[in-house]
Length: 380
Ligand code: NAD
Image (cartoon, rainbow, N blue to C red; front, side):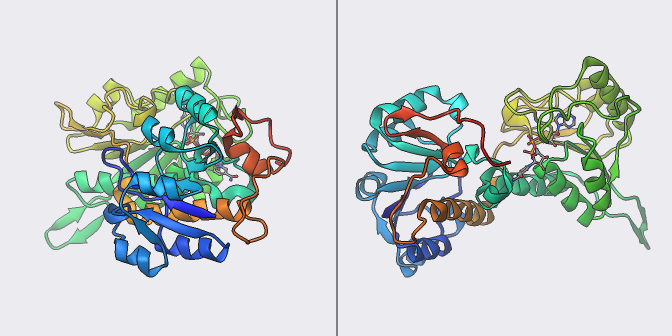
């Protein structure tokens, strides 16, 4: 099968869905790879590097779409990209079907099969295809790097001839994949790190990484771990307790990294304006939930703002793209693992097995039908 990678067109998007390394793996599965000229440029991959890996470089998106049976992308398609596709072709990319009903209808009308990387079921067998986790891991790490870059002080404490330097104090709110990566990066830079999550089971993970779990005096212990490992909205009483605790911490911490999300809902507001006002001049808030409305009241998506009291608030939504080379390498690995499952005989023939939980769960349009939302997976 001919697998073509398109150049990303979204503003500020530097990742690419196919790397020369992943192309080599796909060739071993019997596939032929194509790429649009310049697709890897912002991720540091030249057209020559693709050619050396045996990938055919074509001039533009039109040519790649025409010549391919299956297209791979990072961002969901633009309407014109989807319009150029033909019946029976497959697209593998992020898609966010719940937020893009028109695109889903368009895929149905065009008879295009769409495998949404954001819909990969979170079961053990699918971890190697879990692009949400691989990108969240990058985002958590990068959030700390951005914070450090905006914080005019050391993270680690030092005793020098010129004076004693206290360690920075970092609070990570939400300890999912991104939050745990942020905790790891913060600890490795030497900051005293605190973390909070509504799911009490993460306390052990947080502490094993060397951070301090922020306990709330609340019965039942923490509130909101209802749905299969994911967070549920907190009760008003719990939310009030949580905010009171954060208000106490606000003047003490130098950096706050917020990552709190609840599936299918806007980000909960957890770092309020008065908390920002209570922070020391020079402190930094990095809001990884900016795209879903932000955990901080003052976050402006895609912006870096500095408040009157000298607190920097970063609402960038492109953290993985800021590490485009690494992100492309991980994302293209996720894609090639998906393609490996889609090519069971390793003979270059894609078998779209809708009985397979992972393939079924990720497929949002197939054979002229919308196949989202999927039925619940059979395997846990
Ligand atoms: P996420 O991005 O949906 O949310 C981030 C974190 O915010 C979560 O830990 C959540 O509990 C927390 N949160 C929500 N409301 C909060 C509040 N009011 N205050 C503080 N924290 C709050 O999370 P994620 O990274 O997708 O991870 C969610 C779960 O899924 C975790 O248990 C994770 O280990 C699990 N997971 C499993 C797999 C797998 O099995 N393949 C893969 C990835 C994640």
